Length: 424
Image (cartoon, rainbow, N blue to C red; front, top):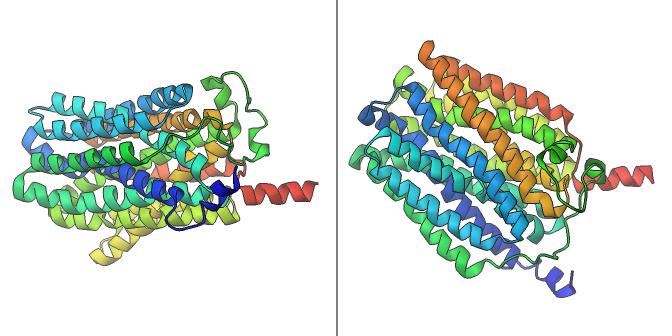
């Protein structure tokens, strides 16, 4: 790395920070589009006559296609050694799908639009994280991933979406709310096309933890089974199943539970759930920042332990709305682990040329088995029993995710260097 390139990282207004801002905002609006269906489900269900199973399928189909796109298209991007054209295409297509969702005359057309959206939003994050892994300073890799993945997604997708879209739906209808959700992505596509530069193919690989990458080959090609033979990749895939399931169950069933079971009006429900976005924003920055300093594994364990609090608070707390919001906030801090198990840990456990593919594989497992299968199962069980059963399944998924974190191998550079110093 040239001296000029190193020095260019120090000013506030440098390419690293500008890239982080643009990709973070773009991913935030991608997540805004994804969550738009979740917060608009109470309105769509009434208009289109959807039951709990169909409501769950809207998110489940998106999750399946998200998973397939995350692995297949991210692998395609790795094979081509190209990132920027993929990002522009993703932004244009998922924005168009949001607009198509608002035009959907029936449940099958709505399902089709959400499926196509998932296929292009799934690989968006791995490709963005692969770019950031190359362009990030070594001491900022974790925090950059957290800011990009969680901070902007939280503010736009988890705070702004539930606050703004129900108000639009209440005043103008849920279709207009989808139209509003789709427009910002087109502006982001223009920004990426004009400003982002394609990372050099021979860019230096990020420092990795050798203890976690001993079984990762550095030449030839690497298949799914070979990637799963790397312990951290396998463990992150399993964590992803239950934590993505926890997350999608929350956004699928909490809006219906709060409005139908607890009797909250739609705007009040949206305002309450907006605290989840602030929790994700805080933990999305805080958890990766902390992991850069004390290690990935203890942060993963500590934050995932909180996951069940959101569901149990919504289920059992009967006091003031203010305290309920605080409980939801504390439990949702667990979402700060997503940049770690989806991005940072797989990237630190694999050779650079497989980074996007490995991250896509983790996303694929989480979306297919967690965001789709577990959520669809929860919807079916809720139809057979009661809606609260799905909320309890959300709490159980978070608890299992916390247990799996104990099996991770530490990859934080500060910890790896310390271990090497002790050993040497």
